[in-house]
Length: 639
Image (cartoon, rainbow, N blue to C red; front, side, top):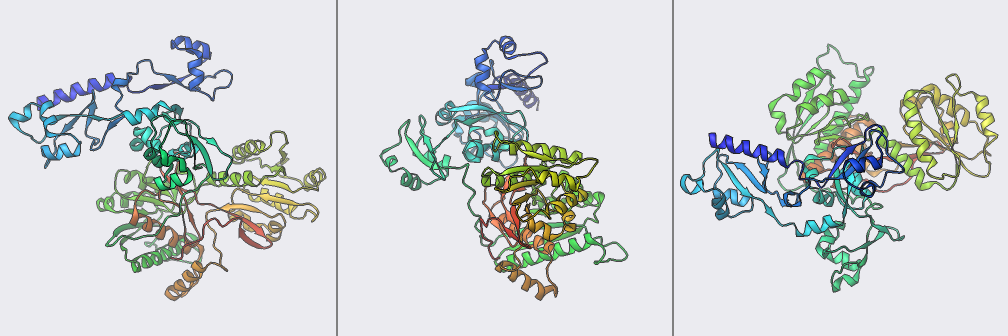
């Protein structure tokens, strides 16, 4: 036992001494009064070194800026990031290119050699005591790291350091540099297990030049790249790559210019529903039924009606999946909409072995359940909350509805795609909530055409006067469409906006864009929304008249429950069906592809905290008094 403690102590001191040697680049926080020149002098590097590693620096630096600097203590001989870490667990310690592994029950020399990809002769060589004592539980054995860094070092030669910024994710960075998440993790093995942290310095590839041909880029083949490495980088087969570039059949050469798919412009493939034979899943539902109350009033208690409808829709999904061969064991809990009850339920030991937990419905309770199940097996699905979940650091958390921030991004992306020099007018509100949103929207709209002014219409004394709209209208260009942007959902503000824009003369061609549409819009006259061609983002869209999948669901629901399904029943079906269908294949939701159910689009991305969020958002417009999809990118699959 003393020998083990001594080894571990030596390992710890060795590990501490290496911390400053294993990173080629470090970060530096600028202090008050410092400049590029003074930092360069204090760090014994040149200003050019700083500017080269920090291309975003314009002019000079300011206090609290984060810079990337070369690490003078970096020793490439001690860099183990190129090592094969297959078999290494959280219990193992790595020092001086060796793994120190504590033997656990049922392990043998053979199983250890297979697990760590070494030979038994190597194990005996570095652990002489094995020849005398044999292998025993609790021993610490020294295992050489297997390092074959030729290919990875070649890749790293053509990379550059990159500072992770707030709200960036592996998904957003991989899209930014036109690579897959897998390739990004290959360049930075640490982020595969630990995720991204703000101000991390990671490696990213050189920029890919655009070819101007829709959907494709021109890529320059780098030194030591092979046909195989190119197929992994761009997610193509060898046949597909050669079909695009016949010259590759003669071999891959440095400096070749080849045509590859534009991963920035392209979207994920469709998720294919498939249930493996004899597949079984366990799912728990935590919903606020309030069953302990003396009486239940489904007419007056809106939350109870939402909960019940959601649950009935979920049962429909499970029935459908069972008919397709999926075995589902479901356990239902009443959270009573209580944080304490939610905590108590999620402390149950057997819940740790479930595949997924759907619920609770509200963010406060979701946060409690997520904390309790953070290190367990189940995915935690927040099914209907659109509030920001990014402060919950749990890679197993899935927010099934896009947040307001995602809605803003999606709508601005749509505006950028459709913009053709229209006049842009932003109508602001005076609330603090609206101000931050207003500033973001203004900045992005100004970038569309820096030479053209983005006009604003602001309230006075808390509201916008009708005369203000009349005066403003006289300044508008009648020959082009004027685009108005609504930045808030305050009822009084919405009334001011639509009651005035909705009565503009027909001669004034205008279009209004919103960034959400909640219950506050119910008080607005639909005729006004139609007159202004109102556009908005939404997590759900149900085509009641034309959707075959909805009509089938409606008929089945009526047969079973003798009533028409509400939108929450559709949500219950969609959430449960998509969740279990994906879990039947794999738990990696981000890379599985897109899907569309009865009324919900699923396009999972990594959230800023490392959790998962559904970024499937519809853009909807008023066409007369009907609401229509702006584009129908993918068709729903009839379950």
